[in-house]
Image 1: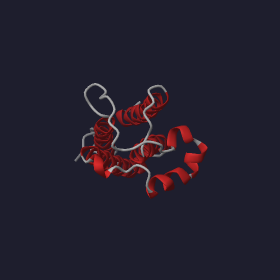
Image 2: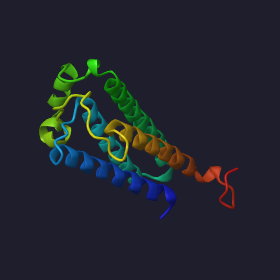
Image 3: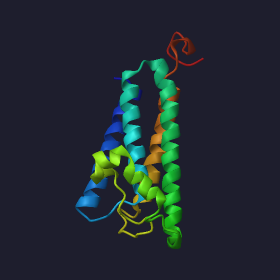
Length: 169
């Protein structure tokens, strides 16, 4: 198996694990997800889905899909940064607002409310996990995934872009 397939499988597995950890924190530790948490969950799910799709695509399409994956991961990083900004300015919480109502009306929130229904306040402070808050961890993972997708895109060159000995021209 080549490195790009291994990376895609690893990214998808980590995203699934992160969603599982989110459910544990919600159900086991009572940490209610806010609207920004739910959006980050959607992004992790989208990244996992992109990885699965890319595994099924030919190498040429995988390069384009990897750039899309990097863009989605960067969008997730933007949401995590917004979440950190809200936590730094608790008076501006994103709590019960029109965005939460809209998120909770999406069919996935009705289909999987435990995973995708926003019930918490963005400014709520929870105990750090290994020294980082949940949005900080999300930001770290989104950055790792974006860099991984860029690496995959650069590794998946068309056969015409490679020399006889497998090195790039």
